[in-house]
Image (cartoon, rainbow, N blue to C red; front, side):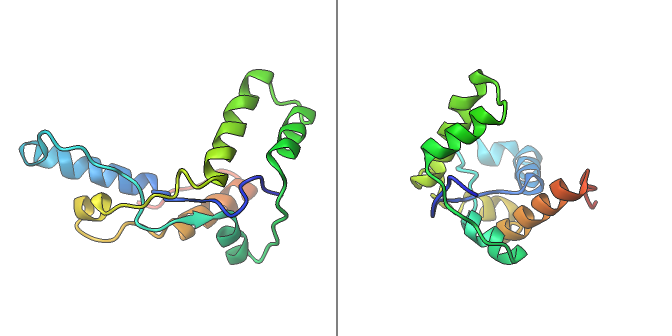
Length: 132
């Protein structure tokens, strides 16, 4: 079940964010006064991840999601945060892509779909061990 609908995220792997930061720190003068949008150059959706894993996804409304979270014992203070995240994804506010990250990396970032699938598999099977 997912409250995200057809929403997608221009996700970025943590490793790519670290590489981008390293690029800036190696030559700070070349980046002075610049503002970068560190978003992915491709989007990934729940349907993309589920498809890669061979799973089906059933869409649920944000109202049903709220009930599911509240019924699952989520602390009341956390409900608005989780609903806000689901809502902005569902309505496309995190799907904006950009080209700053590939320029800082001097190449393509990691595939966000592969990174998301790896995270899901790692979450389901236990602690993730990152490759060096």
